[in-house]
Image (cartoon, rainbow, N blue to C red; front, side, top):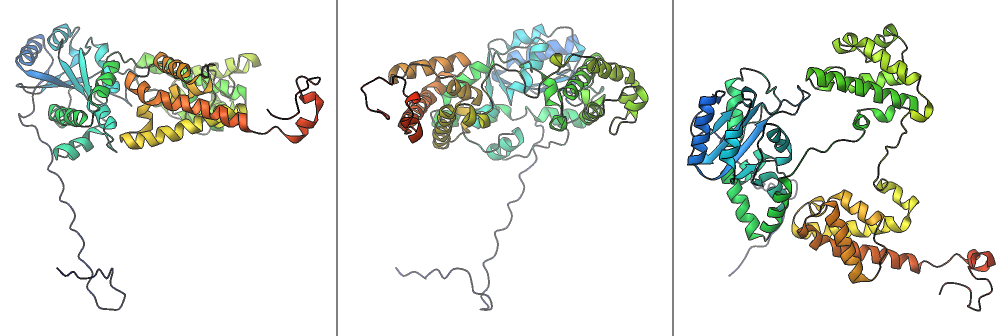
Length: 457
């Protein structure tokens, strides 16, 4: 058999015709509702119909919830979508009911399918809905190494349909809800059962099904963590100088948060972070000066001006010792960038462990932070166990990780890496030769009268 040589791209001016470009792939078809748009359940009678219908279905139940993030202070659910094989899609208005106990009873013992469960579980728990079992399609995608794990991307990649996302940031506390919004919401559970089945099969094929089960079990008890010193997340805080100005940010943030909670509106709609930072930098002492501060304007600035001024005056009168410091108080290790200065051996432990975890993550086809929560990694390596016998150290490291909340599959994969990083960093530190001037200085010898020769052993 003869073959023609590959001459590569044509030289300019030779007259050769370039290869035609590949035609762009046609867009995937838009996902539509197979059963049409269902009515919203907002009466006891229709809630009983929903419950009876779900009981007649089989298999897991796809669930989603819509909140009014960006509009309301609360994280409550304003719409709940459900779908199960053998039934239709249901749209439930939880605001219309004092109790959803009949729904919780109907869901008892069934697997819930959610996408990004940590977003929805707290608001579902708030209305009395708790999973017996769950499957998180976003988390499954992460374990399987998909580079993008948004619902729309996974549906397009695995099922070949496009999901419209134009209503993802609307105010779901609006009543009545527009039909276009309801259709968007219903589509979020339209193919969630099918997506779950494909991901579950891939988890089994890659040997990651048990890892996923451990992750899902842990998720069942998820609660939204309470942010310590949440005011430090104020945008632009890095521009604020001095403890009193930091105290002003804290006071204005906490005042705004209190007003927002009372009114159930998102804090940024009272005054933006930029206004807080501007007022903290200027430290106006009265209402006129406050409202003339650059960036401090709008209805919320004027309506609550007396409260803003009172907060600033209180900060001006505070003792220096009561003002916040630049660095937040915490019980964890310092920021990694400070490790080299504070503890070079710990910094080396972290470097070695990160390198090994990155390699393992590439091998397993998942993000490194999925292998082990970065906070668990830092805590273990900043204050490792004292023991250095390899077997005992491995057991101690595994115990630390378990205490922090790592799952057994994570501990099995990562505790040997952390153990090796601790031992190797110690060995490297022990091999560093003692400075010559220190060896010549008798004061550097812990036992000057010893017969042992000078220098490292």
